[in-house]
Image 1 (spheres, rainbow, N blue to C red):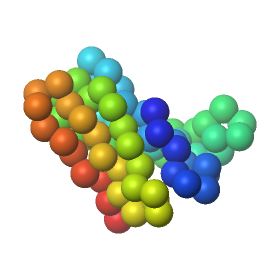
Image 2: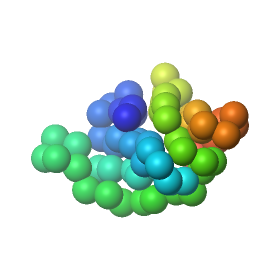
Image 3: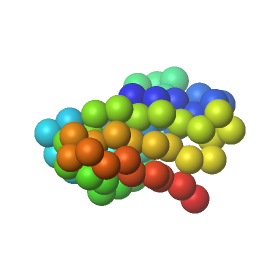
Image 4: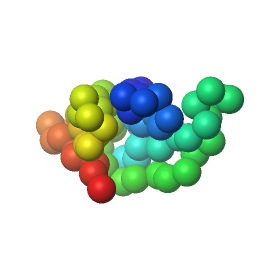
Length: 68
Protein backbone atom coordinates (compact mmCIF):
# COMPACT_ATOMS: atom_id res chain seq x y z
CA UNK A 1 0.00 0.00 0.00
CA UNK A 2 1.16 3.53 -0.72
CA UNK A 3 -0.37 6.92 0.01
CA UNK A 4 -0.35 10.06 -2.10
CA UNK A 5 1.78 12.85 -0.62
CA UNK A 6 -1.30 14.68 0.67
CA UNK A 7 -2.64 11.48 2.26
CA UNK A 8 -6.02 11.67 0.53
CA UNK A 9 -5.66 8.52 -1.58
CA UNK A 10 -4.14 5.10 -1.05
CA UNK A 11 -3.15 2.54 -3.68
CA UNK A 12 -3.51 -1.07 -2.55
CA UNK A 13 -2.03 -4.00 -4.49
CA UNK A 14 -4.53 -6.86 -4.59
CA UNK A 15 -2.10 -9.74 -4.20
CA UNK A 16 -3.15 -12.93 -5.95
CA UNK A 17 -5.10 -11.02 -8.57
CA UNK A 18 -4.42 -8.53 -11.31
CA UNK A 19 -5.72 -5.27 -9.83
CA UNK A 20 -4.89 -2.31 -7.65
CA UNK A 21 -7.60 -0.59 -5.62
CA UNK A 22 -7.64 3.18 -5.17
CA UNK A 23 -9.09 4.33 -1.86
CA UNK A 24 -10.28 7.73 -0.67
CA UNK A 25 -11.42 8.81 2.80
CA UNK A 26 -8.26 7.26 4.21
CA UNK A 27 -8.86 8.94 7.58
CA UNK A 28 -12.06 6.92 7.99
CA UNK A 29 -10.95 3.46 6.91
CA UNK A 30 -11.04 4.08 3.16
CA UNK A 31 -13.58 3.73 0.40
CA UNK A 32 -12.68 1.98 -2.87
CA UNK A 33 -13.27 4.44 -5.70
CA UNK A 34 -11.44 2.68 -8.53
CA UNK A 35 -10.08 -0.76 -9.33
CA UNK A 36 -7.37 -0.74 -11.99
CA UNK A 37 -6.10 -3.77 -13.90
CA UNK A 38 -2.32 -4.20 -13.74
CA UNK A 39 0.06 -7.15 -14.24
CA UNK A 40 -0.11 -10.55 -12.60
CA UNK A 41 0.09 -10.69 -8.77
CA UNK A 42 0.86 -7.05 -7.95
CA UNK A 43 3.16 -6.83 -4.93
CA UNK A 44 4.55 -3.36 -4.36
CA UNK A 45 3.23 0.14 -4.87
CA UNK A 46 5.10 3.45 -4.81
CA UNK A 47 3.73 6.92 -5.46
CA UNK A 48 5.68 9.69 -7.18
CA UNK A 49 6.75 12.36 -4.63
CA UNK A 50 4.39 14.88 -6.23
CA UNK A 51 1.58 12.33 -6.58
CA UNK A 52 1.63 12.37 -10.38
CA UNK A 53 1.98 8.62 -10.87
CA UNK A 54 1.81 5.35 -8.98
CA UNK A 55 4.17 2.52 -9.86
CA UNK A 56 3.20 -1.11 -9.28
CA UNK A 57 5.61 -4.06 -9.34
CA UNK A 58 4.09 -7.31 -10.54
CA UNK A 59 5.27 -10.89 -10.04
CA UNK A 60 5.35 -11.45 -13.81
CA UNK A 61 8.38 -9.13 -13.96
CA UNK A 62 6.56 -6.03 -15.16
CA UNK A 63 5.96 -2.59 -13.72
CA UNK A 64 2.60 -0.90 -14.24
CA UNK A 65 2.47 2.90 -14.27
CA UNK A 66 -0.79 4.47 -13.17
CA UNK A 67 -1.33 8.11 -14.00
CA UNK A 68 -3.78 10.79 -14.93
